[in-house]
Length: 89
Image (cartoon, rainbow, N blue to C red; front, side, top):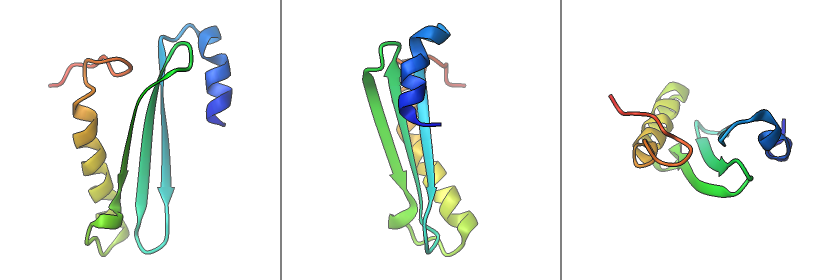
């Protein structure tokens, strides 16, 4: 389902925001993740991207692990903020 569909129905759902994640698997063990955070009105609050293209991963599992490690580090700065009101353990 497209991002626009979710944004159009966000206010109807009663949600206070939306985290939208896209995951791409490219050739040569390159993975990309984009996470976008929108408020209830569809305004982009923040966006984070990560890619395994700048790692030396030689396997698909290694590339996936590398990109997940990158995005996890980037998400830490948003914990407790708009769109990600979670508490870190």
